[in-house]
Length: 315
Image (cartoon, rainbow, N blue to C red; front, side, top):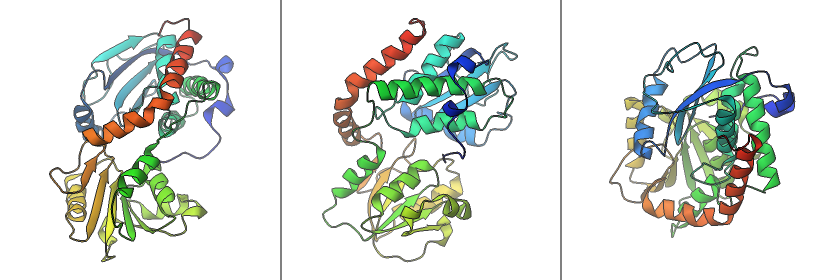
């Protein structure tokens, strides 16, 4: 998911100015479904129609699918092609949950920055008069305050994780191929483009070329069908909406004889049973994440409690 233009929502208003309220929130996350089950639902959402709502908001990240409905609630269920199994009611409880998510206290990597930007982008896409836009400002402001107050930040974020996993290669190829056009793919390309040539493969190369910062001048942006013989390469998968045709293109990259290591950051494994292939949820990778999380555990716990206490612990 790409970053949106314009100032952050919390700079446009404050919680004191907010007039929107949440009636209820329904969700599926790692407490209700396995990570693979969550990932399997994402394709259904990619193909869904009718998810725009004058009173509701869909929030989807790597580890959750959530629907927020404004007061007064005008629909009984979220208009989604999947069933959301858990519900919380009331503005304070829902905003506290949203703020904890945005702060990174509920992320696989504690304190990671991308989830804040994903929450921001979800609200920023709403029309200016949507009743939930002020709610985004309220939750993001609270999340920002909690992150600063408790110095909550990832000690091993996604970019560091990819660098660590790829760095295990004895002889790294001179090229890196990143599949995806969102902010995670951009961050990986920027982080790892200092010592090798990077190719970013995306559905909308023109849009991404405009978006990339000057620091990524050594990055080549192409459609996945435009990549030609480049020699040896490591591969990072950071994309969503894997149609069968797109999956076939990725499979050819994964199975290429000149391919080195594969790091798969997709919600569910794109492919299985390949050598030198590591998915985000592989036990060895999750163990690495758990070790990296240790310095942030206390800060995440304190930030979560502080956010809950902001609303009298009713979340």
